[in-house]
Amino acid sequence: MTTSTPVRTSLPSALPVAVGLAAGFAIAQGTGVRALGGAVFVAGGVAAGWLWRRRRGWAVTAGLAAVYLVAFVLAHVLAIGVGWPAWLAVGTVTVVAAAITYGVADR
Image 1 (cartoon, rainbow, N blue to C red):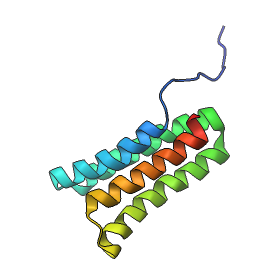
Image 2 (image 1 turned 135 degrees about the vertical axis):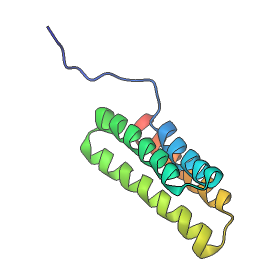
Image 3 (image 1 turned 180 degrees about the horizontal axis):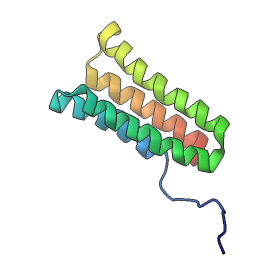
């Protein structure tokens, strides 16, 4: 006899968002292998997306996925286009994306 009830995990979805953005960048910078950093970024997004869908449904998942992707692009715009130091750009977008995620999905 199985029951299919949603399981509430204590892991905040803001954590894989922060790890995906910050660690993805750090790994890409540290190793020089951008694809490896991209894999960490994707893994963080998939983990967060799985939590969002289970907790809040598809509409919230789509919105927060857009926030995650925009943060990734904005980090590049700030670093390359505006001239911010890369760590500052990534750190800023990571904090903002994690805060939005926490407010929408984890609180």
